[in-house]
Image (cartoon, rainbow, N blue to C red):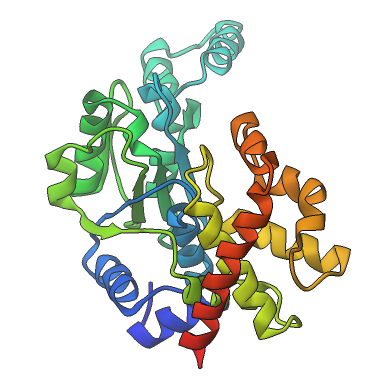
Length: 304
């Protein structure tokens, strides 16, 4: 997917994703060696976005399987289109020379099979990025479903047969650690721990999205993000939410957040009632901004 490590690094940065040398090298090796990449870390730390950044850097498509409790094989792999099969049978029944044996084989071919993300990912001429998102929401039985795909790059589907990959996708598995991912998948994967970025790195990320703003503005957004995540909120802000806040401030005009802006910004900062009440406490928002200023100064000093 990438001719060189340098080209991958430039591609990720061009897509707006800033990764350290360890993450970039691991992505590069995973792509070269056809190894899945397991990303673990808190929600909102940029795991999913890394998959999209890799796809953009490689100029390819993302096939995304969003995991959830109770997900089943049909959602992941696909199923036969029974209505289309019935229609075909009805049309052939009108023919006097219907070959029922060949029809049975035809009904269980790929043209009557509605493919899910896992199967679609194997059918691209050019490798895609297969994102299996929030794998920790499913059980070990569903994990076992993935082992054939990630070991020999094929899927064995009842009545349809074994489908081998036309191209080997770049696989990204993400986990918010609600449940421990099983050892069989871990052994097959390269592992990256993804935390929320440092204030210095988040300032760089904000700068990529708001290049016409000052360095102080970028550092201020990063400092506010660090302060919010240190406040034991039920829903601390993700990187993407901080980018939303930065762009909202550009629309409103101010270069920095002040205590007077609390009520206007609450819908952007607090995503649960408990968090909203916490920020509405007397001097709560002012105290948060004080912490943010300290982190902002640290980010500015580090940049210098």
